[in-house]
Length: 320
Image (tube, rainbow, N blue to C red):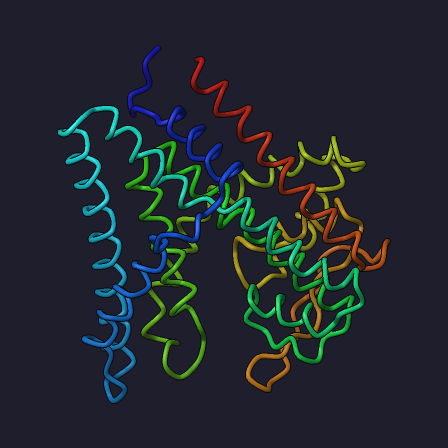
């Protein structure tokens, strides 16, 4: 039976395969960079430090919807033009653009860049590479804290950089996947609770929360299944998420982080430093095992097990 909404399982498989094998080549400017430049350009036009809180929220909302509309429309337009030249060119562009929204290989590489200097006893380089993937200060962190930061980032991005873009890619191809990626980029740029972005970035943060709501819950199912292959159990994952996910300040990020904590048998959360100030993040999971180099290897195993499950789901969806 043909679904009422045409789904893009073939494009999703292609995009996931390209990311798994190739990752993000360095010889071109990644679409996220263009999205960030567009967002900063519009911010420069709209932001006014002296405006009221309400005005900042309105201006920030205009920015968010403008960026999302431009990204979606431009992506759909370029795919349409490519399809006019040759249908196969349109298909190829759709698959390739979708692949740029997925970052499974990039997450794996980020984890290995931290792991390698840790294995060599080089804390200085490990701190530097951890600083590339987290916003907290890393220059004072010891090995367990560097491991925690890396694991938390990879766990959170199983939703943000794998499941969510694939979910929206299945629903609407590259245009919808890039719209999601734009929303995620806006949150990373403006979703801060500081003087500048508390109100101006409000819409960007809320849109990202809303878009991730369903994919984060799908991720819970995937991680519960992944537990079967990773010396854990679905029941343990579900119990931990039910107990701890709500402690996280994000309505979505607590799900993959507490699920991964359950599978790994570690405790995440604790004190993080941002711009000289210490903030406490609620604990997720139980400290059954220590946070060490093996924990980074473990979270990458969780990542790739999830990717394999996603391949299987896409193949099943394509067949039926």
